[in-house]
Length: 95
Image 1: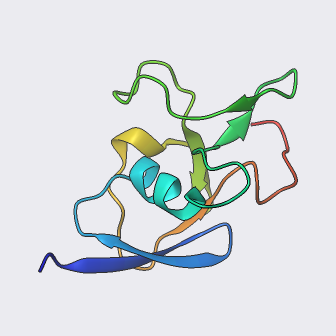
Image 2: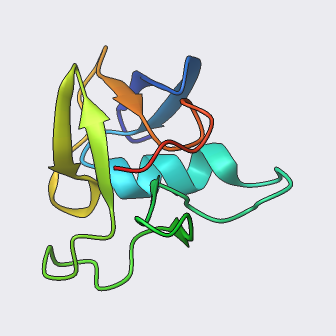
């Protein structure tokens, strides 16, 4: 069985396999919710955004990690105890 770590996404604890990206953890956390997609932020016009390219080029997966804004969820590995905030956590504030 793969080692699992726990992190917090928008105040909710979630366990993911070690080595998972933050984008994958967000997708897992959103599975089964009304959005059922990995929403990370809102554009300046208010449109919902989420991981698109998966390699850090598009910048659509920006989130706040441990208080640091504009981190790329697709390029950041999840760490035990990490705190992640998405647009869903702040009522959809534009980031």
